[in-house]
Length: 213
Image 1: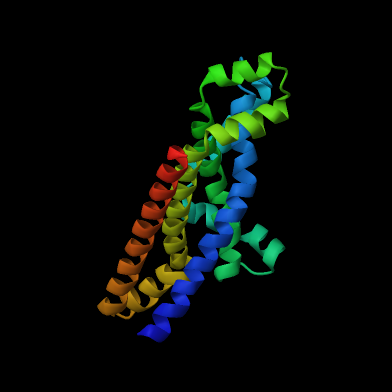
Image 2 (image 1 turned 180 degrees about the vertical axis):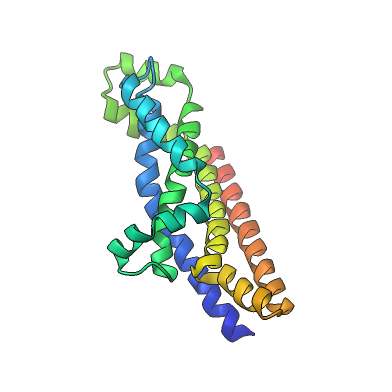
């Protein structure tokens, strides 16, 4: 059993790791833009804000498996194939980016507006407010948001197994469902649950630690 479980676990970790990085690269700037372009904020752009909100809402409304199928051409363009662990990183990243944007937006909105106004009165520029006020003040909440993103991606990676994405989800479907191997199915599910619990625990502990400091 180990010769099946270990490679599948490594595939899941590989997908989740790189998808987290790429979804943050896409979603983090979008989340910042959603906040600063709001009415009465530091870079007020109502039209841009509405466009960004619309795009993010549309992408978030797609079920992941449908979005993954729709993004097959993009996966083929970027990695040269549509099936497999590496190819799955493309739709995973794009599917999670809107979620990341909303998480970042929510975290940054928790920052006390008084701190921002105080920085403005001292002559701070917009980039200074973003990188020296908004982000540092929101770090504990951002850590929890990134934790939720990783957990979300673990779930997405398991669903990707339904259409050849690899990982523990693929193993559970191929051996557990189609070959009626309930042991493989149960072990795969248990490992996914442990991964989620572990990530949540570490994220919570890190957030609390940073908040105390």
